[in-house]
Amino acid sequence: MTTTIAVAGKGGTGKTTIAGLLIRYLQENKRGSVLAIDADPSSNLNAVLGLSLDGTVGDVREEMLTKVGAGSMAPGISKQDYLEYKVNEVLVEGSGVDLLAMGRPEGAGCYCAANNILRALIDRLGKDYDYVVIDNEAGLEHLSRRTTRDVDVLLAVTDPTMRGLTAAERVIELIDELKTKIGHAYLVVNRVDGDLPVAMQDEIQKLNIELLGTVPRDEELAKLDAAGRPLVEVSDDSSAYKAIKRIAERIVA
Image (cartoon, rainbow, N blue to C red; front, side, top):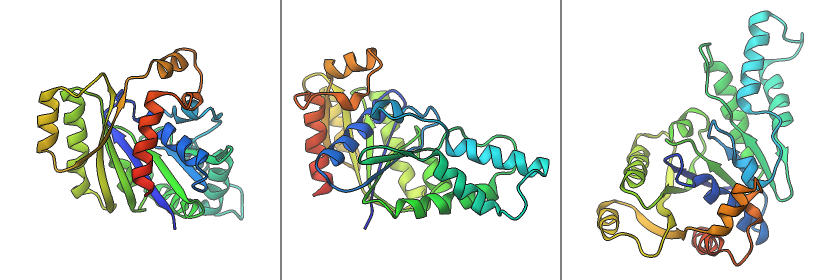
């Protein structure tokens, strides 16, 4: 049985860091195999995980459409077989975690057929893993567009600002509009200095979502980021990682 965890929120709130440290927890605690899906067009989950990235699903889709348009598809190979081969080619295999980056959004061509095939391929690929962790773009649009798989846990990430919380609230509102079924949705507040502001606590109380935890601002993470080092190299004593472990333990429980 595959457990799918999606992380979403406004850009700049640290959702990719949250996703990366959650993946580290799953690796360290031998919870099973992990497929990380980077669904943010900026594609930087690989940097957080310390993995190389040579191509994306978006590149595969564009390449196939170019070949179809030019009539240069190899004879005897179907579009589905071609896409499956190329998706496996851009799948990055790491130690305890594999990574698939979705890459750039669709251009001006006709993408429906290619996207339908890719959606089925990615869903089938995910079934081979114990956990699928999806680092989303700012919204949740791709969950309906690029995968039909249900999401067991959705983490709506915000920083300790009202603007970030408003964006997280929009994520929560989108749940009812998705074709994808969401099992449990939680709020996570990242980069917190001390206690949450009272105004923010009051606003969270109004939301129809449980606050799963807060993650403190962590200078060790900031130093790794500034040095261009993978954030999963943060020490076990990191206050941020300790907070993520508490959050992860509640999820996998």
